[in-house]
Length: 193
Ligand SMILES: Nc1ncnc2c1ncn2[C@@H]1O[C@H](COP(=O)(O)OP(=O)(O)O)[C@@H](O)[C@H]1O
Ligand SMILES: [Mg+2]
Image (cartoon, rainbow, N blue to C red; front, side, top):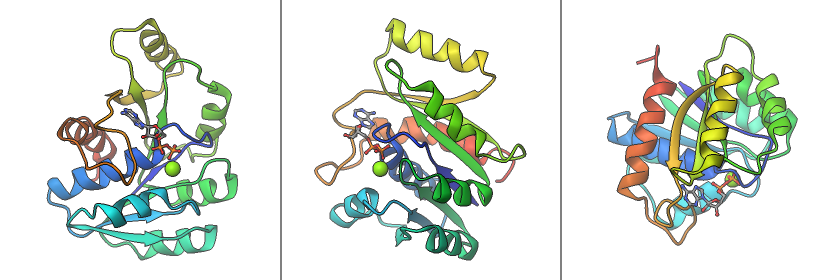
């Protein structure tokens, strides 16, 4: 299983989502779990270097070729973090995906970039949106949820804005983040486990 986390837009929560999904998979008993970091910026690889999560193996694969190879070699569960703005890598990764998770934000969203991402995903592959760093109870969030529903896209999760969930080598994984992303993982694995 290759769960691809992607959006052509940067700074939406791809790396955070990738790491939490991989950690949630470990907690669900998947072994081994691989995090394939296809972003040359390697932010998720760097984070896991500082705070290793037992059970997650990191493979840095910062090109279309290396990412494709890592995904084909994977025989268990892999989560694939992808670079922003790279249609070739995104397209190669989604073509081999068992499921695609699309992190997005509520408010100030460039919906056209998200829709362009979705257009790259082959029709047969399940996909869902995760609203990251959401401010619960705001009109922005309500509006975003309504908009995605209108687009007939499944919302697989709403992750609240929390300093404790925020990505980066300064941070350990938070319990609340793991819980929220476990629900996303369950959606992504529907029909596979
Ligand atoms: N739930 C959240 N609450 C607060 N900050 C978040 C949350 N999710 C992501 N962030 C922050 O948003 C920024 C972008 O996230 P990141 O995962 O690096 O996105 P991408 O990989 O798409 O560029 C980072 O500073 C990260 O810490
Ligand atoms: Mg990233």
